[in-house]
Image (cartoon, rainbow, N blue to C red; front, side, top):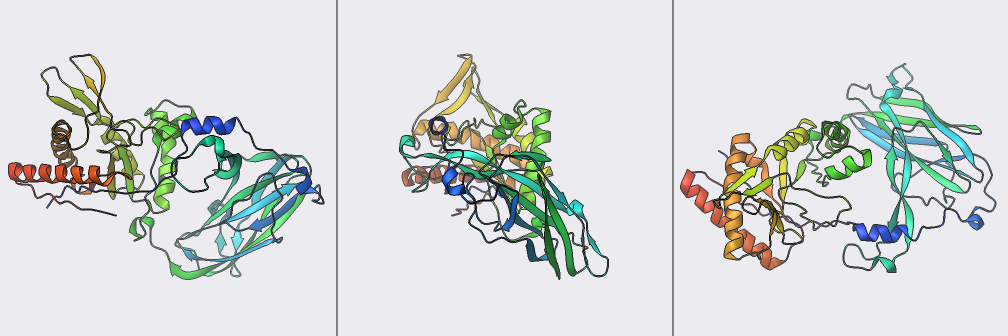
Length: 408
């Protein structure tokens, strides 16, 4: 039996508005703090550090030197740590070199299972009170460790700078239990060798698709196109997205983020957030919905291993403005009538009915949710009432049994 699942979501997100970014960039933070580096040796300093902490770029890290990482892992698990490199002198190039890990019986955790990445810093402003209204001018800018670059083979490090490095080890399911030892080398104006000791336990972690742990990180396809400088929705764009989505799937991601209207978050995001559905109002007043991009995108994400839910944003966007093409006017037009009005209900009833038919044809009917984010109670009540009326109409007309679920 098939079900159409309408989901009402309230989520918390931190978004930096485009205008906030431009203001922050006008107030670049200092690249270094010479006084803080007094007494730091002008050499290659290296240590393991917690994977749960961010370290300032312009300050020497306050850590106890650790030249050995000792940890435990299950078969099928992926484990992580962080290395820190800091220096009181300019270093032209540093490189990373890993080795196989070997136990006492000659069994190997091959170095192909070890990945490293230089952690890049991005500009941000300060979030003192979390998400919400604030004036960007009241918050100073700073660098924050954020992006892990797994492609760069070598980088230069400026004087008085801390450079984090991310280290991940994947333990294949067929690994023999035991104590595996190996090294990681940091090569610069000197060579520093650190030790890795991993005890592989006789326990196996199920595949991510079988985890009860439910991760839902919103995807933002347009930002990937911008960063890689490829056309949005081009073949190159889909090829580049694949590694990102597979990484999400391996972390337990279960939900596909889709937009069925333009800018469901009122353009809080730096990049555009375009609709995957093209809305067209015909000259005779009827509506046509083009789901071809929606279908292509959802199928692609499912092929990457994320296939349990499709969250569709949003009937209640942050700005009530729904874009469609009007054939009579021959231009893009915006519908702005308030939520709960007869015109709003008519606008959405037609789409929801058509969308339901399409989802049933695709076989996605029982995993699709209409999702909202942090919307006022009155708006939510009006939309829930509308959804129930659409459900009742479809049940009576087509004999479908449709379910409605609220999810906190």
